[in-house]
Image 1 (tube, one colour):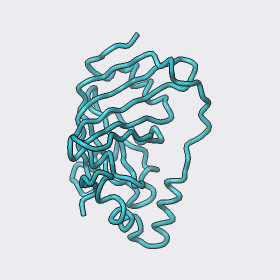
Image 2: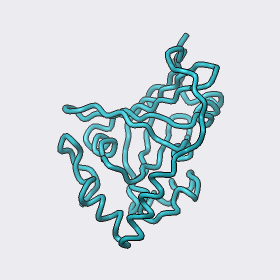
Image 3: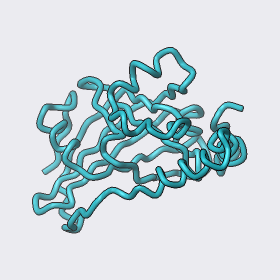
Image 4: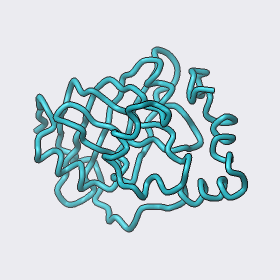
Length: 188
C-alpha cells in the first residue's frame, strides 16, 4: 500500500541511493511531456528533507531544462528492480543552476568529482523543492540484474573535447538551445 510522506525519510534516502538509475518527468504548459532515464545514481543528491538536485550533463536534448525554465513542475521516480518491489516518487518545482552561477560550486560538492572529469560535460544542476514525497508497491516493475553503468556519454563528451576545446559548447549551441516544442534551453 502506498504512503505519502512530509519529507524524504532516512529509509527513503537509503532506497534512493541503492537504485542504479532514476527517471525525471517534466512538461511545459503545452506541448510534449518528457520522461528521461538518468544516471548513474551518483548524479542525484538529496540536499535536505524536501530538496534534491541532479547533475544534468550534455546530451541530445534539452527538455528537462527547458521545462524547468518554462513551468518548473518536475517528478523524480526511483523503482526497485530487485526482489523487493517499491517505487518512490518525488514531486516538486525545479530551478536550474548554470555553471557560471555563484551557487554552482557549492552544489557541485554534493556529487562525485569523477562526474566533472570532462570539462564542459556538466550542463547545469537541476534543484527541486519538493511538495510531495510518496511510495507505492512497484509490483509491475520487473526483477532485473544490474550489470554496470554505461560510459558512452563520457566517451562521447571526451571525443568532442579532443576534436576541439569548444566541442561541447559548440554541440550545445547547435543542439540544446531550444526544446522539441521550441522552449528556450541552454542560454545562448
